[in-house]
Image (cartoon, rainbow, N blue to C red; front, side, top):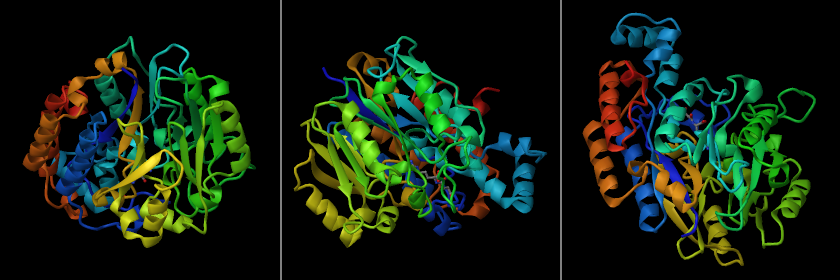
Amino acid sequence: MKSVEVNFDGLVGPTHNYAGLSEGNVASLSNANDTSSPKQAAKQGLAKMKALHDMGVTQGVFAPQERPDMYALRRLGFTGNDAQVLEAAYKQAPALLSACCSASSMWTANAATVSPSADTSDGKVHFTPANLTNKFHRSLEPETTGNILKATFANEQHFAHHQHLPDNDHFGDEGAANHTRLCTDYESQGIEIFTFGRYAFNRNMPMPAKFPARQTLEASKAVARLHGLNDESTVYVQQNPDVIDQGVFHNDVIAVGNQNVLFYHQQAFLETDEFLAELRAKFGDTELHCIEVKNEQVSVEDCVNTYLFNTQVITLPSGEMAIIAPMHCYENSRVKAYLDELVTLNTPIKEVKYYDVNESMKNGGGPACLRLRVALNQQELAAVNPECILSDDKFTQLNAWVDKHYRETLTLNDLRDPALVTESRTALDELTQILNLGSVYRFQQG
Ligand code: SUG
């Protein structure tokens, strides 16, 4: 049997809320303070996972993080019992409280960078959790992400786990959101493309003027070294700083790749011609489809509003490719017209399927943000924790788990409710049994 690409989707956690925490992320800021629905959010995510499973694609599940992060709040000087800590944080520093309650680990494209065994010098699949230093609420994630990765890919013969990069802006690392792999088929050596926003040590190089560039070149190179990638199969390209300033906070908001397809907007990269020339030279003879969307076809603004490129380009069991798009693409007539035409062109993409992931979209997370891709050969797939692979039964079980533990609605005012701590821990404790993860959370570690 051939190698497959498994999407590990982040389960939305019980504290999903809209706190406006991500400067540079248009949706996060414009929906700040809205009432969220953790239950809807988790179910929308599960429905997308089930849809891919039903298409015959292997689908994984990635556990959420423990929130509220009471350890972070105490580390920042709030004292007393849980109720006192939450109340003091709510009164003195509400932004801190919401940061420590964010369910942002749902966007597993930011969980880690993954290099399949065909690309690495020791023939193992390598994982480096993203440090996410650019946003405080996200910088709370990497340690537990590492625990969950180790519990999901628990086999030293096949999987190599690295510590996240140093927690400093110089090594700002956003994981797979700024990393794409192209290949002829999943089992062959691929080309790993690292897209960075700025240079850490040279401020004379181009960088955005308004919004932060989250990923540095130095972080990307460190990950490539850790993973044992060779230079002939690795490409570094800078994001266009102008589009970062228009709301493209991660490269996966403006470009996506799968196998021999790179789908990107004309303005995505800083030096597109040089980049494509290097890519074509390194990719070799096989037909590479570089599908460039021009400004006059779809504007950057429409890309940011609909997440045209935050779609999943997946290979179906038939060998044809499909695009998994958010409903926002269906509802925008220009984007819909573009996609209608795309599937008629001479490219492997033959189908577009639309899903409602609105609860996630309102925080700037589209279908592709919600998944971490891991290409695995059959031995490696057999070594993955089987309880983390979606089946019809697992889907039913997880839906029932959400129904049992999740609130219908959540506002920022609800975040100071100490019952949320208990509810969340009870839910996650049960989840670690459903997914057979062991004690990945601090509250379980005593
Ligand atoms: O890091 N939003 C996330 C969205 C991440 C999307 N991921 C990818 N593009 N791969 C972020 O900006 C908003 C949380 C809030 O405002 O409540 C947030 O964290």
